[in-house]
Image 1 (cartoon, helix red, strand yellow):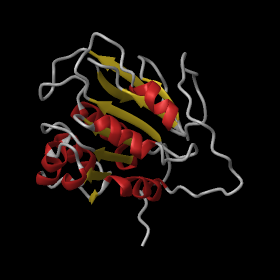
Image 2 (tube, rainbow, N blue to C red; image 1 turned 60 degrees about the vertical axis):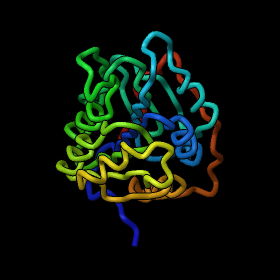
Image 3 (cartoon, rainbow, N blue to C red; image 1 turned 90 degrees about the vertical axis):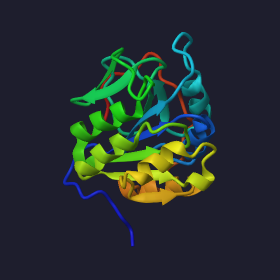
Length: 220
């Protein structure tokens, strides 16, 4: 039986969090999502350094079908667009606009998965899907609780398929996960949840990185 978000209307948002081992996991998920995935995607990947620009956006852009960008202050999110938190800055969303801040570390990290997930849950409510991938620590567990409290749906990578299992295990232990899936199954569940319908006549375009960011767009 198919499962979809029980919402009346509005932009669906997928928020993803990862730490150690996360780049390969993110690539595996993102390269399988169609360009016309009817959701916006926001990603926090913990980074060791805030001094040098992350290359993850460029890497994902080469692999993904969806459009990819590094989040900047004031960007407007829209479906079909993937935005990544820059190193050293928390990523939040308000009124579909991205905001970056240098507030205190949360669970010893910045950007924090908890910060993004909690912000998205407050903004999009039941239209929010949270995904916890491989990583050390407990970042993301409280964010999953926040998403579920607003009627959203959460997914965790199976600890057995995670290179580092602490983050998925923490979210599962908090009883804040609806679906525990091996990495290769996460894409299918996401497409089911956002109500993706394949169009046989549509030819997927290659992933692109947006710089500078294109304002506006179809985000309903």
